[in-house]
Image (tube, rainbow, N blue to C red; front, side):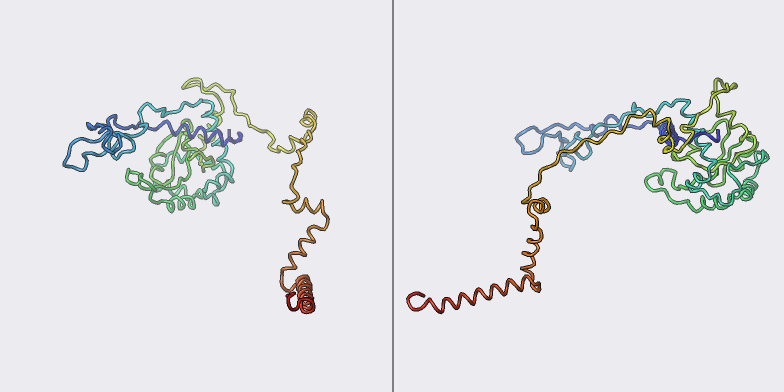
Length: 351
């Protein structure tokens, strides 16, 4: 069980549907927004034809009613109690999700990714003797956790306590905090009462593991502490079908999705490549005709030297460039030649 394949998608799906099965139905009162004798004023009074509250002498008289766009009106598509609140789940899927959550708890990277502080923990999975099941006092339970290397984890839970955002703070759930280790026991000889008052610590029987506690929020990798009896009972309880309350028929195990996770090696193997069809050449794309008057690169192919000529024309208008000096020199010579010609040939009535 603890070496099964990891299915985070299955854990998310089962957790999402299981969390819906504790919801209670809620709905509007059937007469909400319609508990008044409103009638429309009809046409001809330059007001909308929405029903209006009758009477006078108060602000409420004449106000629109019934419509969902009106203040105090009815709700559009009101909630009803016969909504599909709960979700049916397959037994195999639920058991497979539990097995995945148990397997993920044995991998330190996944446990640390959830935020657990396991730097001082000796090993994962953490297995302790069955004597812990007989613990009676919370002080003893806290001392046991401290000796197991959970001091940093307990401090993290205490520091995380903060006020809940939203309206839940006024509905008897004012504070939220992170979750700590989950202690899995085989027989309750006082362990539940001893550990239940330590913040973040939860206990669970190996025969009644709940995915909502194994993978809070649909994310596996929670820090588990197993008693010896519960650790040895995990394969017996969760690796086979449960045909009745007192009898479990063996012979059912969850197979890994991939025995070899090296996908590149699988794809490039001779067995796979020998049955694949040859690689197809991509279809040739039609060449789009481009307008050389708008596309300078196309014009440069048709008219070599086009880009250089355009650059020279641009530099001829920029002061300080040799091209600008040539243009100004030619312009000055042309003006002087014109003045000389006018002075010589345009006199008297010819001017």
